[in-house]
Length: 400
Image (cartoon, rainbow, N blue to C red; front, top):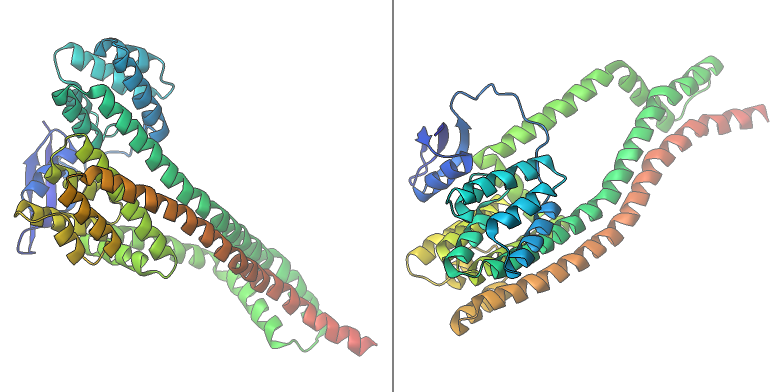
């Protein structure tokens, strides 16, 4: 088993580090979290200079289709090994195919399906393997796989909605920046040499655009260097414990985007916890898995604080309301679900509601972005064109 070197913060908040033997990186992180250590860095000893691996990722859509087909085969009464053999041989993704065939060999050798899947954490995460383990223990593997397929499909739909909403503004802004850069780099110098040859007095906007063009032509390498250093610095800062929480907290406080991110986090939290609790996964383990899949460190900290309070004997709703992260409506509905013994059903209803809210928020964001993008294009490109034509109007009036 590999040895992992780790750094983190202990119960008292002091920096701590050490070494740990575990099956993989995810198992090492899980073991440290059980010791109430906030992990900031984990790396396998002896692989610090290993080259990055490209490819090999399995898209969620492929896992959702596999899970749906797997549940149908299990429900039809096909042996587990035969199902894995059939599904593994028909996969187009080579990494996924290799993982499934290795899982088939493990199961054929006597391992449980969940334990075999845990050896492939890049394909099957903790949520997936824990639900499969619960399904095997309860003899309802086909039902669990159906729930997993529904969960993954809804998660993929939610992520695709957000990505599709961001493609349009990012594409427009990127094209506008490229066009402005090319104009300032190649077109404006031609106008500048023309104006200098005529000896005309130039208005302030024209002078500003020409100086900006000179700066880009002379210091384009500096601009690229500053952008690269800024991107790398932000990425490294976000990788730290404090930096991740500062950036994630700032995003949640952003006027329009913050509300959308909060709704996405609530929908993801409720959907994940509902799926886990309905499948028989213990609530403490379910909260820990839900925290790791939250996608935002502020939300993750709030869920982990809730888990600690539940471990002390409190309900979920009480500490969840004290975090000031989740809306009061969500907290109250969870409290009702706990009182009536239908927590999973209530969480599913909340998830459905907030997924619809995300749809509405994305549509509203698109309507808001359209005039902002039009104004941005008008000011950037239109301003440059007007600044270059202003001296021409002056020269034409003088000739007239």
